[in-house]
Length: 267
Image (cartoon, rainbow, N blue to C red; front, side, top):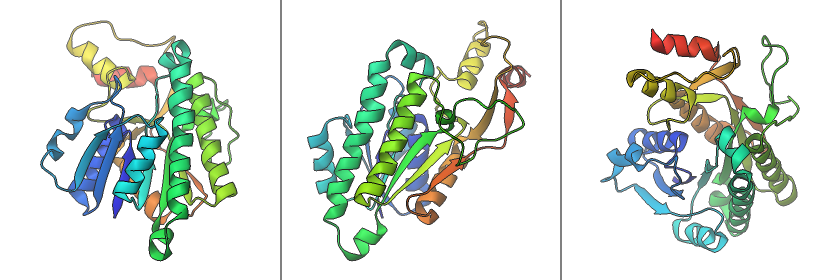
């Protein structure tokens, strides 16, 4: 099968592509704008792989995105491209609106036009998978509870609001146009090649360099931590076995306060 991956030079996207090339026989086309958080070094091991191709491309450029569909003829679209840092979204919200909302719209429209022309088995096979975040649900009042697929949306930052908007667009394109979609909302990922603005790699880097360790407030904020390769396995399960139109939450069942995580790293 042919997989079109957006944001494949990002942390989760690159882990997904490494899995697809190393552990399956699928073909992958990766399109990525290469922003500050992208890292092609994470895909260096695939340089000589015939089944992998990379195009530098901004998903907001509709004409170029449609050309990619025409030339590559994907069976699966896995949409991971997004601005994802909460603090950056507070300072530069426009970038998040453009990439996360308008960029998702462009991908949906290109997929809709492409899907409309597919016939028979190719049409039955096609899926658009939108990879989102549990931050669209806001905060849990009771730390003993868990988000579910039925938790009401309550985003609290420009980042989470833009991802919530993208989720709604994806559902609308399914209900209005019949585009076969699945949505996943994941908890906090960690693992190799993660950009150092995120908590775990930042604490590791600062600790190794003897610098102060950044902890917001009292550090008692609780997060559920999900290893990136486990996330990839879940994404592949959803795209292959998930029910069209459904949403699936993906968590690590590994809740810790931020200060617990920092102390564990120091140990």
